[in-house]
View 1 (tube, helix red, strand yellow):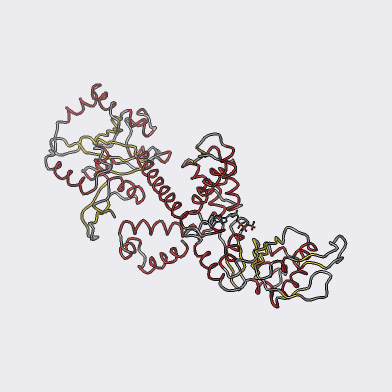
View 2 (cartoon, rainbow, N blue to C red):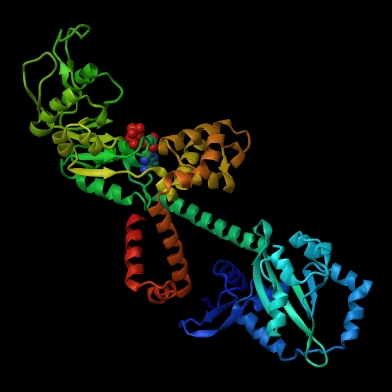
Length: 533
Ligand SMILES: Nc1ncnc2c1ncn2[C@@H]1O[C@H](COP(=O)(O)OP(=O)(O)OP(=O)(O)O)[C@@H](O)[C@H]1O
Protein backbone atom coordinates (compact mmCIF):
# COMPACT_ATOMS: atom_id res chain seq x y z
CA UNK A 1 0.00 0.00 0.00
CA UNK A 2 2.90 2.34 0.69
CA UNK A 3 6.11 2.91 -1.17
CA UNK A 4 9.55 3.25 0.42
CA UNK A 5 9.76 6.87 -0.64
CA UNK A 6 6.44 7.78 1.04
CA UNK A 7 6.74 9.76 4.25
CA UNK A 8 5.40 8.96 7.69
CA UNK A 9 2.74 11.63 7.08
CA UNK A 10 1.50 9.74 4.01
CA UNK A 11 1.13 6.67 6.18
CA UNK A 12 -1.02 8.53 8.72
CA UNK A 13 -3.66 9.30 6.12
CA UNK A 14 -3.64 5.79 4.79
CA UNK A 15 -4.00 4.28 8.26
CA UNK A 16 -6.84 6.63 8.95
CA UNK A 17 -8.69 5.93 5.70
CA UNK A 18 -8.11 2.17 5.55
CA UNK A 19 -8.60 1.29 9.20
CA UNK A 20 -5.76 -1.24 9.10
CA UNK A 21 -3.08 -1.86 11.74
CA UNK A 22 -0.33 -2.82 9.33
CA UNK A 23 0.32 -1.54 5.82
CA UNK A 24 2.48 -3.19 3.20
CA UNK A 25 5.40 -1.28 1.73
CA UNK A 26 6.39 -1.76 -1.90
CA UNK A 27 9.60 -0.84 -3.67
CA UNK A 28 9.70 1.05 -6.99
CA UNK A 29 9.08 -2.19 -8.91
CA UNK A 30 5.94 -2.84 -6.96
CA UNK A 31 7.53 -5.72 -5.05
CA UNK A 32 6.83 -6.18 -1.34
CA UNK A 33 9.59 -4.44 0.63
CA UNK A 34 8.36 -4.63 4.22
CA UNK A 35 5.61 -3.46 6.53
CA UNK A 36 4.79 -0.32 8.44
CA UNK A 37 2.68 -0.87 11.53
CA UNK A 38 0.72 1.42 13.79
CA UNK A 39 3.36 0.96 16.46
CA UNK A 40 6.02 2.13 13.97
CA UNK A 41 3.81 5.11 13.32
CA UNK A 42 3.51 5.81 17.00
CA UNK A 43 7.27 5.73 17.43
CA UNK A 44 7.72 8.02 14.45
CA UNK A 45 5.25 10.51 15.90
CA UNK A 46 6.98 10.42 19.28
CA UNK A 47 10.34 10.94 17.65
CA UNK A 48 8.99 13.82 15.53
CA UNK A 49 9.91 12.05 12.29
CA UNK A 50 6.80 12.94 10.31
CA UNK A 51 8.61 14.09 7.22
CA UNK A 52 11.06 11.22 7.13
CA UNK A 53 10.75 8.68 4.34
CA UNK A 54 9.63 5.20 5.43
CA UNK A 55 12.89 3.82 4.12
CA UNK A 56 15.00 6.06 6.39
CA UNK A 57 12.73 5.64 9.36
CA UNK A 58 12.68 1.84 9.24
CA UNK A 59 16.44 1.69 8.75
CA UNK A 60 17.00 3.86 11.88
CA UNK A 61 14.56 1.76 13.89
CA UNK A 62 16.16 -1.55 13.10
CA UNK A 63 19.55 -0.28 14.23
CA UNK A 64 18.19 1.18 17.48
CA UNK A 65 16.10 -1.90 18.25
CA UNK A 66 19.16 -4.10 18.21
CA UNK A 67 20.49 -2.27 21.25
CA UNK A 68 17.14 -2.20 23.03
CA UNK A 69 17.01 -4.49 26.09
CA UNK A 70 13.99 -5.99 27.72
CA UNK A 71 13.96 -4.97 31.37
CA UNK A 72 12.37 -7.22 33.90
CA UNK A 73 11.52 -5.81 37.27
CA UNK A 74 10.21 -7.05 40.56
CA UNK A 75 6.41 -6.70 41.09
CA UNK A 76 6.78 -4.97 44.46
CA UNK A 77 9.00 -2.30 43.01
CA UNK A 78 6.30 -1.47 40.49
CA UNK A 79 3.43 -1.31 42.92
CA UNK A 80 5.50 1.02 45.11
CA UNK A 81 6.23 3.15 42.09
CA UNK A 82 2.57 3.44 41.08
CA UNK A 83 1.55 4.75 44.47
CA UNK A 84 4.40 7.24 44.54
CA UNK A 85 3.51 10.93 44.09
CA UNK A 86 6.82 11.67 42.32
CA UNK A 87 5.93 9.08 39.70
CA UNK A 88 2.45 10.63 39.38
CA UNK A 89 4.00 14.04 38.87
CA UNK A 90 6.31 12.68 36.21
CA UNK A 91 3.54 11.09 34.19
CA UNK A 92 1.33 14.15 34.66
CA UNK A 93 4.01 16.32 33.10
CA UNK A 94 3.96 14.26 29.88
CA UNK A 95 2.23 15.67 26.82
CA UNK A 96 0.95 12.25 25.75
CA UNK A 97 -1.78 10.46 27.63
CA UNK A 98 -0.79 7.58 29.90
CA UNK A 99 -3.20 4.83 30.93
CA UNK A 100 -2.00 1.99 33.15
CA UNK A 101 -3.87 -1.25 33.87
CA UNK A 102 -2.81 -4.16 36.03
CA UNK A 103 -2.50 -7.82 35.01
CA UNK A 104 -6.26 -8.27 35.37
CA UNK A 105 -7.11 -5.38 33.06
CA UNK A 106 -8.15 -3.10 35.92
CA UNK A 107 -7.29 0.60 35.54
CA UNK A 108 -4.73 1.69 38.10
CA UNK A 109 -3.58 5.08 36.92
CA UNK A 110 -4.20 7.72 34.21
CA UNK A 111 -2.43 11.03 33.76
CA UNK A 112 -3.77 14.58 33.12
CA UNK A 113 -2.98 14.43 29.41
CA UNK A 114 -5.22 11.38 29.05
CA UNK A 115 -8.06 13.28 30.73
CA UNK A 116 -7.46 16.27 28.43
CA UNK A 117 -7.31 14.22 25.22
CA UNK A 118 -10.28 11.94 25.87
CA UNK A 119 -12.42 14.05 28.18
CA UNK A 120 -12.63 11.01 30.50
CA UNK A 121 -11.88 11.76 34.17
CA UNK A 122 -9.55 9.56 36.23
CA UNK A 123 -12.28 9.05 38.86
CA UNK A 124 -14.57 7.54 36.22
CA UNK A 125 -12.16 4.76 35.24
CA UNK A 126 -9.75 3.97 38.09
CA UNK A 127 -10.55 0.63 39.73
CA UNK A 128 -12.75 -0.45 36.83
CA UNK A 129 -12.10 -3.33 34.47
CA UNK A 130 -11.45 -2.44 30.82
CA UNK A 131 -14.26 -4.73 29.59
CA UNK A 132 -16.66 -2.86 31.82
CA UNK A 133 -15.47 0.48 30.38
CA UNK A 134 -15.97 -0.77 26.83
CA UNK A 135 -19.49 -1.89 27.74
CA UNK A 136 -20.23 1.47 29.33
CA UNK A 137 -19.16 3.16 26.06
CA UNK A 138 -16.11 5.03 27.41
CA UNK A 139 -13.90 3.48 24.74
CA UNK A 140 -14.60 1.42 21.63
CA UNK A 141 -12.13 -1.33 22.41
CA UNK A 142 -9.36 -1.94 24.91
CA UNK A 143 -5.77 -2.16 23.80
CA UNK A 144 -4.82 -3.33 27.35
CA UNK A 145 -7.05 -6.38 27.08
CA UNK A 146 -5.50 -7.25 23.71
CA UNK A 147 -1.98 -6.84 25.15
CA UNK A 148 -2.87 -9.10 28.10
CA UNK A 149 -4.24 -11.69 25.72
CA UNK A 150 -1.45 -11.62 23.20
CA UNK A 151 1.42 -10.80 25.60
CA UNK A 152 3.07 -8.39 23.18
CA UNK A 153 3.04 -4.63 22.48
CA UNK A 154 0.04 -3.56 20.40
CA UNK A 155 -0.84 -0.25 18.77
CA UNK A 156 -4.30 0.76 17.53
CA UNK A 157 -5.85 3.82 16.00
CA UNK A 158 -9.20 4.67 17.55
CA UNK A 159 -11.95 7.18 17.09
CA UNK A 160 -13.29 8.63 20.31
CA UNK A 161 -16.13 11.05 20.94
CA UNK A 162 -16.16 14.30 18.92
CA UNK A 163 -14.70 12.16 16.13
CA UNK A 164 -11.18 12.74 17.44
CA UNK A 165 -8.61 10.21 16.28
CA UNK A 166 -6.18 8.82 18.81
CA UNK A 167 -3.35 6.38 18.52
CA UNK A 168 -2.93 4.05 21.51
CA UNK A 169 0.20 1.97 22.12
CA UNK A 170 0.01 -0.67 24.84
CA UNK A 171 3.24 -2.16 26.19
CA UNK A 172 3.31 -5.10 28.63
CA UNK A 173 5.58 -4.91 31.68
CA UNK A 174 6.77 -8.38 32.57
CA UNK A 175 7.64 -9.65 36.04
CA UNK A 176 10.61 -11.93 36.84
CA UNK A 177 8.72 -15.07 35.82
CA UNK A 178 7.52 -13.59 32.47
CA UNK A 179 3.99 -12.96 33.70
CA UNK A 180 2.49 -9.57 32.81
CA UNK A 181 2.38 -7.15 35.79
CA UNK A 182 1.01 -4.05 34.11
CA UNK A 183 0.10 -2.67 30.72
CA UNK A 184 1.26 0.88 30.03
CA UNK A 185 -0.69 2.58 27.29
CA UNK A 186 0.47 5.78 25.75
CA UNK A 187 -2.22 7.80 24.00
CA UNK A 188 -1.68 10.51 21.43
CA UNK A 189 -4.29 12.71 19.75
CA UNK A 190 -3.55 12.79 16.03
CA UNK A 191 -6.68 14.65 14.92
CA UNK A 192 -4.70 17.83 14.54
CA UNK A 193 -2.03 16.09 12.50
CA UNK A 194 -4.58 14.67 10.11
CA UNK A 195 -6.22 18.04 9.89
CA UNK A 196 -2.96 19.77 9.03
CA UNK A 197 -2.20 17.18 6.41
CA UNK A 198 -5.60 17.75 4.78
CA UNK A 199 -5.07 21.48 4.87
CA UNK A 200 -1.68 21.19 3.21
CA UNK A 201 -3.21 19.04 0.48
CA UNK A 202 -6.06 21.47 -0.06
CA UNK A 203 -3.62 24.36 -0.34
CA UNK A 204 -1.63 22.44 -2.91
CA UNK A 205 -4.79 21.77 -4.92
CA UNK A 206 -5.65 25.44 -4.80
CA UNK A 207 -2.17 26.37 -5.94
CA UNK A 208 -2.54 24.02 -8.89
CA UNK A 209 -5.90 25.57 -9.75
CA UNK A 210 -4.37 29.02 -9.72
CA UNK A 211 -1.56 27.89 -12.00
CA UNK A 212 -4.12 26.40 -14.38
CA UNK A 213 -6.00 29.66 -14.28
CA UNK A 214 -2.93 31.53 -15.43
CA UNK A 215 -2.41 29.10 -18.29
CA UNK A 216 -6.01 29.49 -19.29
CA UNK A 217 -5.70 33.23 -19.64
CA UNK A 218 -2.99 32.74 -22.19
CA UNK A 219 -5.23 30.28 -23.93
CA UNK A 220 -7.80 32.74 -25.20
CA UNK A 221 -9.12 33.54 -28.63
CA UNK A 222 -8.27 36.69 -30.49
CA UNK A 223 -10.28 39.82 -31.46
CA UNK A 224 -13.74 40.16 -29.89
CA UNK A 225 -13.32 36.85 -28.09
CA UNK A 226 -10.07 37.63 -26.33
CA UNK A 227 -11.99 37.70 -23.07
CA UNK A 228 -13.27 34.15 -23.50
CA UNK A 229 -11.95 31.70 -20.97
CA UNK A 230 -11.76 28.23 -22.41
CA UNK A 231 -11.00 25.57 -19.87
CA UNK A 232 -10.59 21.86 -20.19
CA UNK A 233 -14.25 21.57 -19.22
CA UNK A 234 -15.55 23.71 -22.12
CA UNK A 235 -12.87 23.07 -24.71
CA UNK A 236 -15.00 20.44 -26.43
CA UNK A 237 -17.91 22.87 -26.75
CA UNK A 238 -15.71 25.54 -28.32
CA UNK A 239 -13.99 23.04 -30.59
CA UNK A 240 -17.36 21.81 -31.83
CA UNK A 241 -18.51 25.40 -32.28
CA UNK A 242 -15.44 26.16 -34.35
CA UNK A 243 -16.09 23.14 -36.57
CA UNK A 244 -19.75 24.01 -37.18
CA UNK A 245 -18.80 27.64 -37.86
CA UNK A 246 -17.35 26.60 -41.23
CA UNK A 247 -20.82 25.65 -42.55
CA UNK A 248 -24.28 27.20 -42.19
CA UNK A 249 -25.62 24.21 -40.28
CA UNK A 250 -28.26 25.16 -37.69
CA UNK A 251 -27.05 25.15 -34.12
CA UNK A 252 -29.23 25.02 -31.04
CA UNK A 253 -27.49 26.18 -27.86
CA UNK A 254 -28.97 24.91 -24.63
CA UNK A 255 -28.09 25.61 -21.04
CA UNK A 256 -29.17 27.60 -18.00
CA UNK A 257 -29.26 31.36 -18.04
CA UNK A 258 -25.85 33.02 -17.95
CA UNK A 259 -23.80 29.95 -18.93
CA UNK A 260 -22.36 31.57 -22.03
CA UNK A 261 -24.77 30.65 -24.88
CA UNK A 262 -24.63 34.13 -26.41
CA UNK A 263 -20.86 34.11 -26.27
CA UNK A 264 -20.72 30.77 -28.10
CA UNK A 265 -23.13 32.16 -30.74
CA UNK A 266 -20.81 35.16 -31.22
CA UNK A 267 -17.86 32.82 -31.34
CA UNK A 268 -19.49 30.80 -34.16
CA UNK A 269 -20.21 34.01 -36.07
CA UNK A 270 -16.65 35.29 -35.68
CA UNK A 271 -15.19 31.99 -36.79
CA UNK A 272 -17.45 31.81 -39.87
CA UNK A 273 -17.16 33.32 -43.32
CA UNK A 274 -19.90 35.76 -42.24
CA UNK A 275 -17.68 37.38 -39.63
CA UNK A 276 -17.51 40.74 -41.43
CA UNK A 277 -21.30 41.02 -41.67
CA UNK A 278 -23.82 41.75 -38.92
CA UNK A 279 -24.40 39.62 -35.83
CA UNK A 280 -27.87 40.53 -34.55
CA UNK A 281 -29.64 39.27 -31.48
CA UNK A 282 -33.31 38.96 -30.56
CA UNK A 283 -34.51 37.84 -27.15
CA UNK A 284 -37.80 36.15 -27.91
CA UNK A 285 -38.76 36.13 -24.24
CA UNK A 286 -38.44 39.87 -23.78
CA UNK A 287 -41.19 41.14 -26.11
CA UNK A 288 -44.91 40.49 -26.68
CA UNK A 289 -45.76 38.37 -29.75
CA UNK A 290 -46.79 41.21 -32.08
CA UNK A 291 -43.62 43.18 -31.39
CA UNK A 292 -41.42 40.12 -31.94
CA UNK A 293 -43.08 39.64 -35.29
CA UNK A 294 -42.45 43.27 -36.24
CA UNK A 295 -38.86 43.15 -35.00
CA UNK A 296 -38.07 39.94 -36.76
CA UNK A 297 -39.87 40.27 -40.08
CA UNK A 298 -40.23 44.06 -40.32
CA UNK A 299 -43.41 45.74 -41.51
CA UNK A 300 -44.84 47.79 -44.32
CA UNK A 301 -45.83 51.44 -43.88
CA UNK A 302 -49.12 51.63 -41.93
CA UNK A 303 -49.17 47.89 -41.28
CA UNK A 304 -50.71 48.39 -37.84
CA UNK A 305 -51.75 51.18 -35.51
CA UNK A 306 -48.69 52.91 -34.16
CA UNK A 307 -46.44 51.51 -36.90
CA UNK A 308 -43.96 53.92 -38.44
CA UNK A 309 -45.27 55.58 -41.55
CA UNK A 310 -42.15 54.56 -43.43
CA UNK A 311 -42.31 50.92 -42.42
CA UNK A 312 -39.39 49.17 -40.78
CA UNK A 313 -36.81 46.64 -41.81
CA UNK A 314 -36.85 43.49 -39.75
CA UNK A 315 -33.79 41.87 -38.13
CA UNK A 316 -33.85 39.17 -40.81
CA UNK A 317 -33.28 41.76 -43.48
CA UNK A 318 -30.71 43.67 -41.43
CA UNK A 319 -28.80 40.48 -40.74
CA UNK A 320 -28.62 39.62 -44.46
CA UNK A 321 -25.41 37.63 -45.08
CA UNK A 322 -24.70 37.74 -41.38
CA UNK A 323 -25.96 35.82 -38.34
CA UNK A 324 -29.21 36.16 -36.42
CA UNK A 325 -29.13 34.89 -32.87
CA UNK A 326 -32.57 34.01 -31.49
CA UNK A 327 -32.25 33.77 -27.74
CA UNK A 328 -34.96 32.14 -25.61
CA UNK A 329 -36.48 30.56 -28.70
CA UNK A 330 -38.72 28.51 -26.41
CA UNK A 331 -40.68 31.70 -25.71
CA UNK A 332 -41.52 32.24 -29.38
CA UNK A 333 -45.33 32.06 -29.70
CA UNK A 334 -46.64 29.10 -31.73
CA UNK A 335 -48.09 31.30 -34.49
CA UNK A 336 -44.67 32.85 -35.08
CA UNK A 337 -43.00 29.47 -35.05
CA UNK A 338 -44.79 28.67 -38.35
CA UNK A 339 -43.46 31.82 -39.90
CA UNK A 340 -39.94 31.14 -38.67
CA UNK A 341 -40.12 27.61 -40.05
CA UNK A 342 -40.53 29.07 -43.55
CA UNK A 343 -37.39 31.16 -43.07
CA UNK A 344 -35.46 28.19 -41.81
CA UNK A 345 -36.65 25.86 -44.57
CA UNK A 346 -36.84 28.16 -47.57
CA UNK A 347 -35.02 31.33 -46.56
CA UNK A 348 -38.27 33.21 -47.32
CA UNK A 349 -40.67 35.40 -45.28
CA UNK A 350 -43.27 38.13 -45.58
CA UNK A 351 -42.99 41.37 -43.57
CA UNK A 352 -46.05 42.29 -41.47
CA UNK A 353 -48.76 43.86 -43.63
CA UNK A 354 -46.99 42.93 -46.84
CA UNK A 355 -47.87 40.52 -49.61
CA UNK A 356 -44.37 40.48 -50.98
CA UNK A 357 -42.27 37.40 -50.21
CA UNK A 358 -38.69 38.34 -49.40
CA UNK A 359 -35.63 36.14 -49.64
CA UNK A 360 -32.85 36.26 -47.16
CA UNK A 361 -29.42 34.74 -46.65
CA UNK A 362 -28.96 34.55 -42.93
CA UNK A 363 -27.49 32.06 -40.54
CA UNK A 364 -29.84 31.40 -37.63
CA UNK A 365 -28.48 30.26 -34.28
CA UNK A 366 -31.10 29.57 -31.63
CA UNK A 367 -30.74 29.24 -27.89
CA UNK A 368 -32.93 28.24 -24.99
CA UNK A 369 -32.64 27.67 -21.27
CA UNK A 370 -35.83 25.58 -21.43
CA UNK A 371 -35.82 21.93 -22.44
CA UNK A 372 -37.16 22.24 -25.99
CA UNK A 373 -37.52 18.48 -26.48
CA UNK A 374 -39.85 18.39 -23.48
CA UNK A 375 -41.75 21.41 -24.81
CA UNK A 376 -42.24 19.52 -28.08
CA UNK A 377 -43.69 16.58 -26.15
CA UNK A 378 -46.06 18.91 -24.32
CA UNK A 379 -47.20 20.54 -27.56
CA UNK A 380 -45.63 23.91 -26.68
CA UNK A 381 -43.02 23.92 -29.42
CA UNK A 382 -43.38 22.76 -33.02
CA UNK A 383 -41.61 19.50 -33.61
CA UNK A 384 -40.66 20.36 -37.23
CA UNK A 385 -39.10 23.65 -36.16
CA UNK A 386 -37.28 21.96 -33.29
CA UNK A 387 -35.62 19.43 -35.61
CA UNK A 388 -34.76 22.12 -38.15
CA UNK A 389 -33.11 24.32 -35.55
CA UNK A 390 -31.26 21.64 -33.67
CA UNK A 391 -29.26 19.93 -36.38
CA UNK A 392 -26.25 20.40 -34.10
CA UNK A 393 -27.33 20.76 -30.49
CA UNK A 394 -24.69 22.16 -28.16
CA UNK A 395 -25.29 22.08 -24.42
CA UNK A 396 -23.35 24.31 -22.08
CA UNK A 397 -23.12 22.80 -18.60
CA UNK A 398 -23.97 24.97 -15.60
CA UNK A 399 -21.06 26.58 -13.79
CA UNK A 400 -21.54 24.35 -10.73
CA UNK A 401 -20.58 21.34 -12.81
CA UNK A 402 -17.57 23.15 -14.28
CA UNK A 403 -15.99 23.79 -10.89
CA UNK A 404 -12.45 23.97 -12.23
CA UNK A 405 -13.51 27.07 -14.16
CA UNK A 406 -14.79 29.03 -11.18
CA UNK A 407 -11.45 30.28 -9.90
CA UNK A 408 -10.17 31.17 -13.39
CA UNK A 409 -13.38 33.15 -14.00
CA UNK A 410 -13.14 34.88 -10.63
CA UNK A 411 -9.47 35.77 -11.19
CA UNK A 412 -10.09 36.92 -14.73
CA UNK A 413 -12.96 39.23 -13.82
CA UNK A 414 -11.17 40.37 -10.66
CA UNK A 415 -8.28 41.57 -12.83
CA UNK A 416 -10.70 43.24 -15.23
CA UNK A 417 -12.54 45.12 -12.46
CA UNK A 418 -9.32 45.94 -10.60
CA UNK A 419 -8.15 47.58 -13.80
CA UNK A 420 -11.47 49.31 -14.43
CA UNK A 421 -11.79 50.75 -10.90
CA UNK A 422 -8.05 51.02 -10.23
CA UNK A 423 -7.83 48.66 -7.29
CA UNK A 424 -5.41 45.87 -6.41
CA UNK A 425 -7.86 43.62 -4.57
CA UNK A 426 -7.36 39.93 -4.01
CA UNK A 427 -9.56 37.10 -2.79
CA UNK A 428 -8.50 35.18 0.31
CA UNK A 429 -8.17 31.42 0.00
CA UNK A 430 -11.24 30.94 2.20
CA UNK A 431 -13.29 33.26 -0.02
CA UNK A 432 -12.20 31.36 -3.14
CA UNK A 433 -13.12 28.17 -1.37
CA UNK A 434 -16.65 29.40 -0.67
CA UNK A 435 -17.04 30.66 -4.24
CA UNK A 436 -15.93 27.29 -5.61
CA UNK A 437 -18.52 25.51 -3.50
CA UNK A 438 -21.40 27.85 -4.29
CA UNK A 439 -24.19 26.66 -6.63
CA UNK A 440 -24.21 29.72 -8.97
CA UNK A 441 -27.83 29.60 -10.16
CA UNK A 442 -27.13 32.65 -12.34
CA UNK A 443 -23.92 31.06 -13.64
CA UNK A 444 -21.16 33.21 -15.18
CA UNK A 445 -23.33 36.33 -15.33
CA UNK A 446 -23.98 36.10 -11.58
CA UNK A 447 -20.26 35.52 -10.97
CA UNK A 448 -19.28 38.61 -12.96
CA UNK A 449 -21.82 40.78 -11.10
CA UNK A 450 -20.69 39.47 -7.73
CA UNK A 451 -16.99 40.04 -8.43
CA UNK A 452 -17.69 43.59 -9.60
CA UNK A 453 -19.83 44.29 -6.53
CA UNK A 454 -17.17 42.94 -4.15
CA UNK A 455 -14.35 44.86 -5.82
CA UNK A 456 -16.29 48.08 -5.46
CA UNK A 457 -17.83 47.60 -2.03
CA UNK A 458 -15.16 45.97 0.14
CA UNK A 459 -12.95 48.44 1.97
CA UNK A 460 -9.86 46.25 2.40
CA UNK A 461 -7.47 44.94 -0.23
CA UNK A 462 -8.31 41.38 0.68
CA UNK A 463 -11.81 40.13 -0.06
CA UNK A 464 -12.52 37.59 2.61
CA UNK A 465 -15.17 34.86 3.05
CA UNK A 466 -16.98 37.10 5.54
CA UNK A 467 -17.42 39.75 2.82
CA UNK A 468 -19.44 37.38 0.64
CA UNK A 469 -23.24 37.70 0.62
CA UNK A 470 -25.10 35.44 3.05
CA UNK A 471 -26.76 33.54 0.19
CA UNK A 472 -23.39 32.59 -1.25
CA UNK A 473 -22.11 31.39 2.10
CA UNK A 474 -25.19 29.35 2.95
CA UNK A 475 -25.99 27.83 -0.45
CA UNK A 476 -22.63 26.08 -0.45
CA UNK A 477 -23.60 23.43 2.06
CA UNK A 478 -26.92 22.76 0.36
CA UNK A 479 -25.13 22.27 -2.91
CA UNK A 480 -24.41 18.60 -2.60
CA UNK A 481 -27.91 17.53 -1.74
CA UNK A 482 -29.38 19.85 -4.34
CA UNK A 483 -27.27 19.34 -7.36
CA UNK A 484 -25.40 16.10 -7.05
CA UNK A 485 -27.22 13.14 -8.44
CA UNK A 486 -26.52 9.70 -7.02
CA UNK A 487 -24.72 8.87 -10.25
CA UNK A 488 -22.47 11.94 -9.93
CA UNK A 489 -21.75 11.14 -6.30
CA UNK A 490 -20.80 7.54 -7.07
CA UNK A 491 -18.63 8.71 -9.95
CA UNK A 492 -16.94 11.24 -7.70
CA UNK A 493 -16.06 8.58 -5.13
CA UNK A 494 -14.91 6.16 -7.84
CA UNK A 495 -12.72 8.83 -9.31
CA UNK A 496 -11.15 9.65 -5.96
CA UNK A 497 -10.42 6.01 -5.20
CA UNK A 498 -8.97 5.29 -8.63
CA UNK A 499 -6.82 8.45 -8.63
CA UNK A 500 -5.49 7.56 -5.20
CA UNK A 501 -4.75 3.99 -6.24
CA UNK A 502 -3.02 5.11 -9.43
CA UNK A 503 -0.90 7.55 -7.48
CA UNK A 504 0.13 4.79 -5.15
CA UNK A 505 0.62 1.92 -7.58
CA UNK A 506 1.62 3.84 -10.69
CA UNK A 507 0.14 1.22 -13.08
CA UNK A 508 -3.49 0.55 -13.97
CA UNK A 509 -2.91 -3.18 -13.50
CA UNK A 510 -1.81 -2.85 -9.89
CA UNK A 511 -4.44 -0.22 -9.13
CA UNK A 512 -7.07 -2.59 -10.55
CA UNK A 513 -5.81 -5.41 -8.33
CA UNK A 514 -5.93 -3.23 -5.24
CA UNK A 515 -9.46 -2.06 -5.98
CA UNK A 516 -10.58 -5.54 -6.98
CA UNK A 517 -11.84 -4.53 -10.43
CA UNK A 518 -10.62 -5.39 -13.91
CA UNK A 519 -7.91 -3.33 -15.50
CA UNK A 520 -10.19 -2.50 -18.43
CA UNK A 521 -12.78 -1.03 -16.04
CA UNK A 522 -10.18 1.44 -14.82
CA UNK A 523 -8.95 2.26 -18.32
CA UNK A 524 -12.49 2.84 -19.60
CA UNK A 525 -13.38 5.12 -16.71
CA UNK A 526 -10.19 7.12 -17.18
CA UNK A 527 -10.95 7.55 -20.87
CA UNK A 528 -14.42 8.82 -20.03
CA UNK A 529 -13.09 11.32 -17.49
CA UNK A 530 -10.51 12.49 -19.98
CA UNK A 531 -13.34 13.39 -22.31
CA UNK A 532 -15.34 15.15 -19.63
CA UNK A 533 -12.32 17.14 -18.48
N1 LIG B 1 -16.05 31.35 -21.55
C1 LIG B 1 -16.27 32.58 -21.09
N2 LIG B 1 -15.24 33.39 -20.77
C2 LIG B 1 -15.44 34.62 -20.28
N3 LIG B 1 -16.65 35.14 -20.07
C3 LIG B 1 -17.72 34.38 -20.37
C4 LIG B 1 -17.58 33.06 -20.89
N4 LIG B 1 -18.81 32.54 -21.10
C5 LIG B 1 -19.68 33.50 -20.73
N5 LIG B 1 -19.04 34.61 -20.31
C6 LIG B 1 -19.65 35.85 -19.85
O1 LIG B 1 -20.73 35.52 -19.00
C7 LIG B 1 -21.83 36.38 -19.20
C8 LIG B 1 -23.06 35.56 -19.53
O2 LIG B 1 -22.84 34.87 -20.74
P1 LIG B 1 -23.92 34.81 -21.89
O3 LIG B 1 -24.67 36.11 -22.01
O4 LIG B 1 -23.28 34.30 -23.12
O5 LIG B 1 -24.89 33.73 -21.26
P2 LIG B 1 -26.25 33.13 -21.85
O6 LIG B 1 -26.22 31.68 -21.63
O7 LIG B 1 -26.45 33.60 -23.23
O8 LIG B 1 -27.30 33.77 -20.88
P3 LIG B 1 -28.89 34.00 -21.17
O9 LIG B 1 -29.48 32.67 -21.43
O10 LIG B 1 -29.38 34.59 -19.90
O11 LIG B 1 -28.93 34.90 -22.34
C9 LIG B 1 -21.44 37.33 -20.35
O12 LIG B 1 -20.97 38.53 -19.79
C10 LIG B 1 -20.30 36.59 -21.02
O13 LIG B 1 -19.39 37.50 -21.64
